Image 1 (spheres, rainbow, N blue to C red):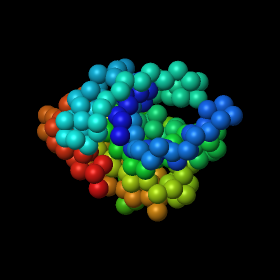
Image 2 (cartoon, helix red, strand yellow):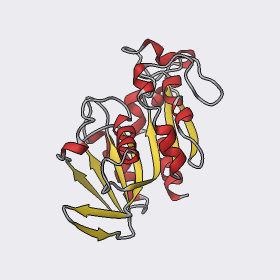
Image 3 (cartoon, rainbow, N blue to C red):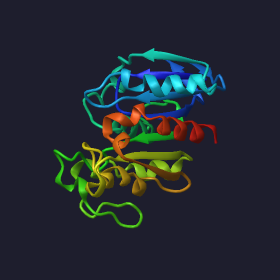
Length: 224
């Protein structure tokens, strides 16, 4: 099992290589599962070093590899905040834009900005229905609605981790909790959804990836 630090997005998903094609040639799966990290807008691969190394230290993975992706189909999410690299990857798979993309087995989202950012999207603090749907949806969120169909057609285990460092403000200084929690509405059966809230100073947006509690939650989820 290999951990890849990929220079786009901000999250981690575990993917199973069912089949990979290169040009006109194809190769069968190695049977191994890669855990791929995506960092956020304005960040770098340094954001994932601590979490990735933790998985190696705990014996879950055998090595860490830094990868810079240059293919056009893989860099169309550069400059997008939060976990959008993951969502666009899933939508590209669902739309059949590439038959060489690995199938996602487990997905872990950290401080996702699904209904937008605090500073740019007034809808991002919208109340949610019981199933996580924002009452007021940003244009950003509406573009993600096709993901519902993806999750209905695949069996993805989704873990959504978000932080609240501001108490009654219900945000991590960058993202409102309701924006992160709106992922719930997108994840449909047979895919599964669970979420974890990190509170206090260590729930601040930039500190989540340096949080040992987050490391342990992620490892437990990946080992299930």
